[in-house]
Length: 67
Image 1: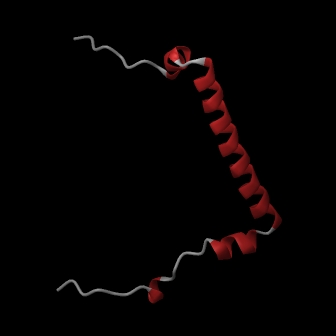
Image 2: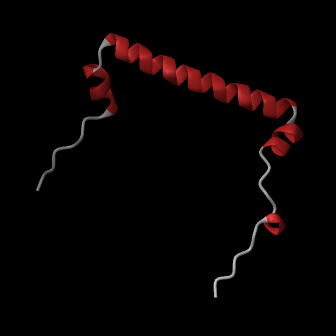
């Protein structure tokens, strides 16, 4: 009843070409930089960040009858 396991991330990285590995690393670094920029902006001015990403209040939502 043994099942073949899917290749792990390490095995997939080994089969990727050097160019593909570098592209993946570049993508991850871009994501990290974007995250850190947002974190820095939040720490510098949390009120502005929260106002920008404010969720609508429930009273402002259109209520639908479910009769």
